[in-house]
Image (cartoon, rainbow, N blue to C red; front, side, top):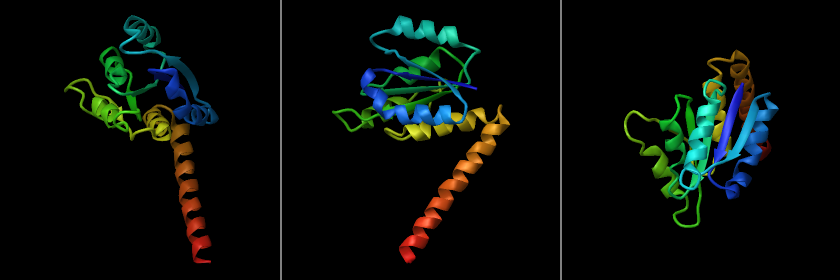
Length: 158
């Protein structure tokens, strides 16, 4: 089980660190890179070609114009999960729209702005088709979330 996390800038890392650790907690190998669709396009495409057939899912995090997930998706058949990062200009809406408005034929699964957890959960759900243990891990995770809500409800009601 292997996931690649690519971010367009080092400043994106704090929004990904906890999610990267979440993947590792479930025994998923994670490769983390900083590569830009605009500033290092040759290196990005070269890396995508290197990892072909070795990786289950790619998570691509980017802010502003956020072309990173689309450029990656155009160069591989590995599923790409786009993670829009909130920037200083449009609160991440620019990033979100750049990812969800992909042209027909080059899909990018996109999660909510700054939601690294949803990105890794989507990656895990995709991989659970191939790795049944992940499906069980995800079921347990959801059961734990539900239990937490019920405990909070009980505590509130007294």
